[in-house]
Picture 1 (cartoon, rainbow, N blue to C red):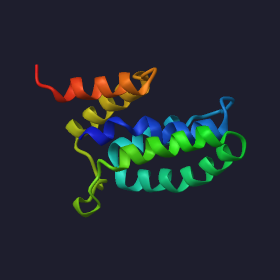
Picture 2: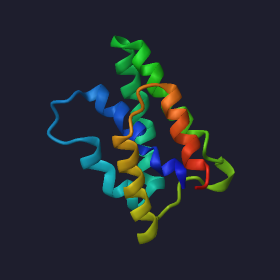
Picture 3: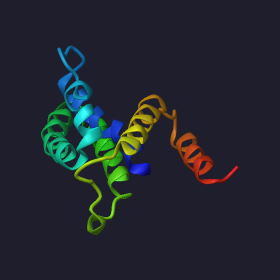
Picture 4: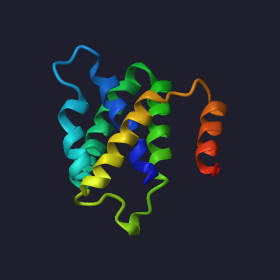
Length: 126
């Protein structure tokens, strides 16, 4: 279920485009639905991210490219023929979604080497 850990990147590009002075955040609007019905919510987020990335690119091209790369890195973990976004998540799966969301939200490596080391340390059994 590793791709669910990376949901923060999908949410952050939209927040970046909309700015910080919002009455509600992407998380406020979509977190509960994404945890319960990912197929429905991630389709909406993907459609919305295209517009938001375009807006970011007009002012910060490099940042938009970086966000697109983050989204691509997440999506490469999914196999389209394996129905990557389930219609519903069980209560246990929703708990894993929550843990993954907060891991992704608060783990921000300072550089690519740190991120790569973190990924490999997770994959290596103790």
